[in-house]
Length: 393
Image (cartoon, rainbow, N blue to C red; front, side, top):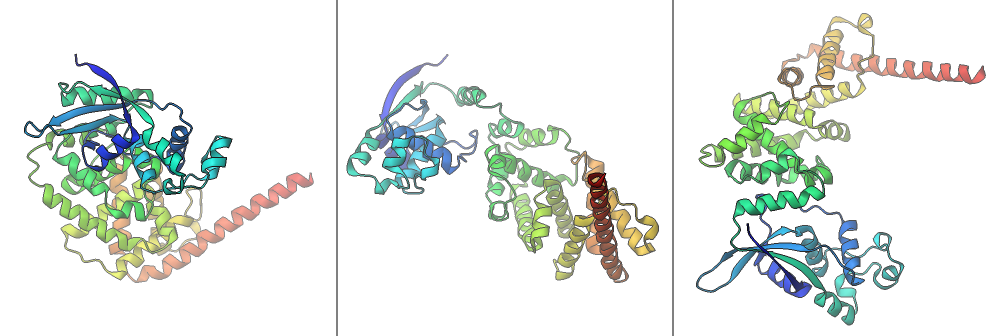
């Protein structure tokens, strides 16, 4: 068993260590630091009021035998330290509506660090943080176990957070791809998704999609296997990275309007479009305006489709063919999203809409949408009439 030592460090000391790279976050097993501004502001408020915050856990992982300089890992407390660091660097202000204490509102509301008084800054620099120093003799496995145990008091680690504690080449590539600007620019993951590493999990699934094609992912087995088997000796890493990044670049062209963006924020639909784009890569099919237009039309039809519509008898043959395709896609998007069968149905339907529909179906697209919109309007009017009738009674 390794030992612990209680210690104290001022914010000034910790800020310097972090800025100089002597105090680091090992992201190979840590969660993401995604506190919102409200969380950060309330931590700073606590410090300015000279109240106690929970202790930090540090591990002196490396010491240079020649110089004696050390690299210390933040085992627990990275979000608190980053919140303090960002405040000192004037990355945010203490918004009044996020401060809980009346005296704090009167003294600090809407101020950045540089706008504090000299005495307030001095007190802030000198604030003492409780630090638990972990025995340098502890192993990395000991630290990962401790990290997981410490965070059980917050919420249980999900499967992806557990996988992230396994360092390796596949894990590193999934994290790297999750840093692409597409995810944030198009708001494809919420703050909670990012905090729980759902973005990294999705990117890992994209790597598997490129490597293995569409697979069943109703459990975590495929991802766990990839993280385990491709820890080292991941010879295809550069090729996989290049292909997935090219697909990400291609997919940006499909975000042409709000309706499409809303559709693609559902991960099952985003995954399906990536499946089609990887098909284009394999077949050397260049992206064209025609395919983007066809995709827009598919989304436009899907957005007004409803499983409860019973209009088949009113449709011409081309309209009915499109309607049946939409119904298949809708059913495959309703449950069992990660089943191989449903993934293949969605892939084949979307691929057909992009590449296999001829010019004769263009009119059918327009008339089918008109029919579905009219049916929806009639249904809504009927419900209103029934409601009015019940009120009248």
